[in-house]
Image (cartoon, rainbow, N blue to C red; front, side, top):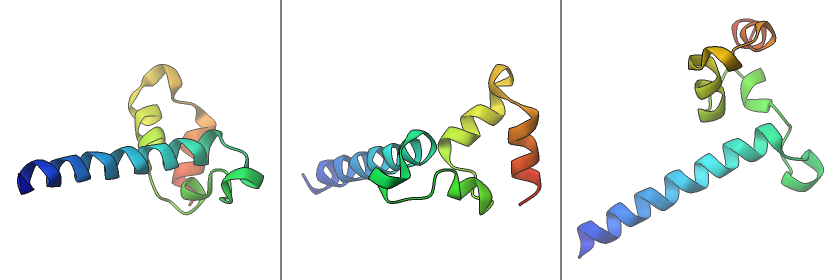
Length: 70
């Protein structure tokens, strides 16, 4: 029972983190209270940027410059 609850808690934590990452990229800073793209400027490669980086059709020179210039 405890193992099941632990796995459920881990899944919920990951889901919460993913939603936060997506909101940081696509959200309105007035609503989310976070600077849009702050993780990228701080050199943190969050899940949305990791996905964009490995997906060639989404990779852009601007993203690459932003990541490498932090």
